[in-house]
Image (cartoon, rainbow, N blue to C red; front, side, top):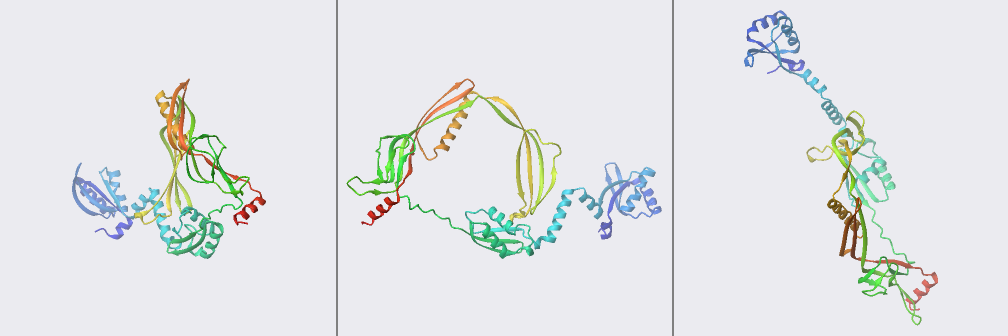
Length: 411
């Protein structure tokens, strides 16, 4: 068993050839070098005698090698001094040890995590950001937090939260909120009547849940601006009646597209070279601890990610690493084949169709493609069934409104 004091001051395991054993023992006796014999072992270069010596005696014993040419070997070093030296050579481990000591000393007096309950429409990150501005965030000292004041300042700053309660348990702040109920806008009482007019050229094919005076029939061709459903009833011989038109009017519409794809294009190719910058995030503090030297590339993309420590899945710690990568790329001019240009044009065509008329139903399509010099051109006629009804308010004067309401009351 190693004596605790020997581990504290440090010791080494050394060996000498068996033939030099007597010389080693005599040298140790003459120079007050204390040792402990560990026996004889067979190694690659023959039989050797092994000894354990504290670092001062081992340092003296190495004079045998320099003065007398004896093949003295150091096999391993142990103890506190060598452990400390190893830590100093590994800055990451030293930093981790410092962080551990800091967390141990301060962990009970600061907020490590904020947990939000009761929110559906307002995100956790938005609530945490307003909380920080109101006086409480991850890393705040518990003794400095005015819970009532934080709640008041938060409710003043946010128009989306109507009530909140903060309960600090240990190093976790549990925040319960109640969101403001969305207000459904009321229909303007001044809008007495409206028409449905056509928003796109087409041929009428159907109606759905229409309220009002229908002015067109199935099979009629309509143009943009034409009246589809009227909001005014009555003739010269009958009382005036007004209504707000509602419903959907479907029409078969022609959509014409022209897509152009050049055969020559610029292609981006990543070289595989990257420069990396790493930053330690500790609560709200940032410490840059690694970055490639040299200037950035002429052309590069920036990719950033943040990873927080979550030991054993028990919860995210306020300690993480932000990594920013700068990936170099080069640009070169490439030429598409006609088939590749056709595929690209088709992709762009349908991307545009789904973006411009997402709720339409496809009825038919006619697509033609051809080359015009160094450009591939795709002409398309896409027939769709769409709701073409657009509401247009009828301006009614105040006297007419009074007369209309009087008619409704039967007077």
